[in-house]
Image (cartoon, rainbow, N blue to C red; front, side, top):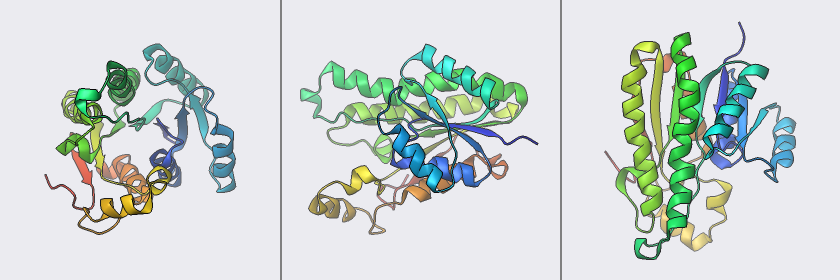
Length: 246
């Protein structure tokens, strides 16, 4: 039996890397998405190869609907039908709302929310036709509770939650599950680059007293992508160290 294929968007960041590794370790062939011409791509691939991972590179701008169609076609023709989609791509353009310009709003909504439509729209019908599939959408604790200075980001991440529940209802009888993960503060390279005193202030607000580990998010993705998660759909998995209960 051929390995199932998983596509991870925004694959070469901290969370994306952990998700790719976890899926590969659980037997998936992983297509790792990045922007065309993404400068660190070769370095990332070399590092992954040195750790024993061999990922298929899927370059595409996820804000571009037609580019998403093309990359899905490429993956399916070269390695097989996409069984698992992890919509992980995301950016921030933080600003108080009164100072936020239209460009900051559009960039975040396009990358963080439109991309979820763009990829899911191209892979969901095939999953339903084959009678098995997993869509995993990366939201955020700030999409659940809101956050000062992140009206654009919180709106996009909250939109993912409504999308997840709605699409889950549409394909539940087709053997396809659709779930969302809402991480809190995770110790990615980006977060670890924040000044120590600022990180300490963040950690002081987290009841478990530490940042999350990227591997913890990867492990949750691997579970949701498994056969054992077939009874869970339309759910929001909050993994935030107790920052917010809902």
